[in-house]
Length: 208
Image (cartoon, rainbow, N blue to C red; front, side, top):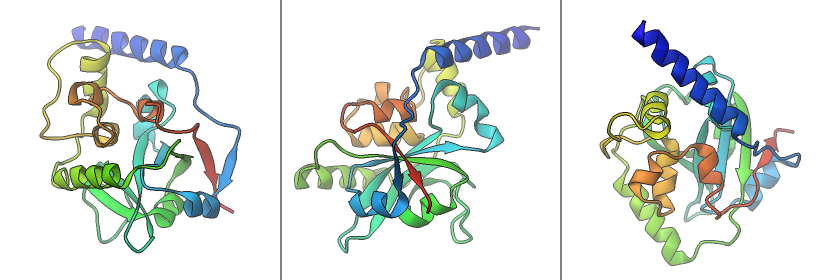
């Protein structure tokens, strides 16, 4: 009975947030080749999954996952992210955690909608190197699997302590790279990352 009441309360809170939250969808669309050609380190790639397991996430944020563009020394466009085990269909990498993938391949194979949010201003070389150094320091931190439970209980209902820094989820990771303090970062959604003030309005990437 108590469990049922908690579930009802959680659903009610989630639905309330979903109703109050403005959509971040843009009517603008950008072809994949254009998005990749113009992408810079620090741009965001936002995902909206079609997977059933992400239904609850879609109730309170328009995006279910976020990563950051990285342009390597050779000019190749990559995506830096942390994700749960099995989220990426790759025969050579079925684990989760901090990973970097080819941007075109990642977007092309994704089961859902993908959006590109450009930086308003390019990163300075010093800032870019500091972010990549921080990402390297987090390279062995595992993904936090209980994202919904943590977000609803700690961030929405204020019940129980926050999570430790032994694990992290996608928006927390990107928030930390942009200098957000850990307490705030652990309660950020992918949509919150997109509205930190660093990025333009997200545009949907279309595959042509």
